[in-house]
Image (cartoon, rainbow, N blue to C red; front, side, top):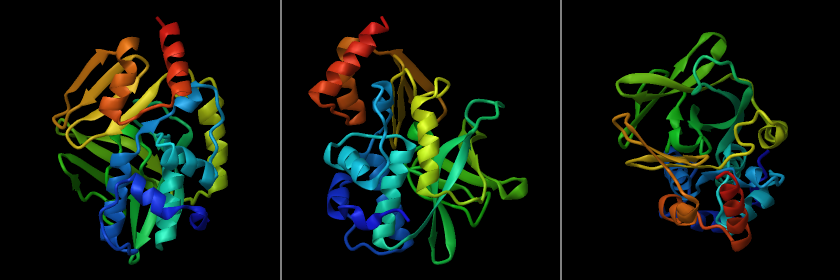
Length: 274
């Protein structure tokens, strides 16, 4: 389903800095690949800002995220992860999720996540939720059980109709990140969601810089001109980023080095907002 046979697995493993040894379709490998991927490939939607189409076929995603060392947003990130996991031998299924980080507003299903089954147990895998997402898989078989990932804590709770909600612990309280139903999603479904996210005027990705990274000690988000740093105790530090320091910040904080053409286009758009 995920065209894992088309993926250059060795190049992918080199991109994520894989040091886990032999690849097996077991939980240890799943956790290590997931953590390596989220640590190496930045979340960003700059192609949407540039007005470019976002291709979701495996080779296009591989070229961009692996060979060009760019980042991507949820569809690109999780399609690449799904292809790699399928190639390794995992059973991978897709889901569509509703973002719940914006209060009580009911949002459309626009987020792509994965469910990977290991020894009969389902695990939520998501390399594409930016600075708030999990660094490792979260068990779906035991709702309510806390998943400690370094200084960050997640859990999944169940609602009526089999809806599952990923939550994060912030300042002593559980906060919903997103919710998803049991309905499987296929790659073609993400093509439709990708079209909305990359082109609709109400999409949060259209018309603004979004670059994010789920660090171990601090989670970073550059949205528009504001850099936010989320700390494990719940504090958020914010500052405005000037155009003259933008490219250096992307390199230093996000590990993102744009080719000259993209860097020039980004600075042009950024400065136009002054």
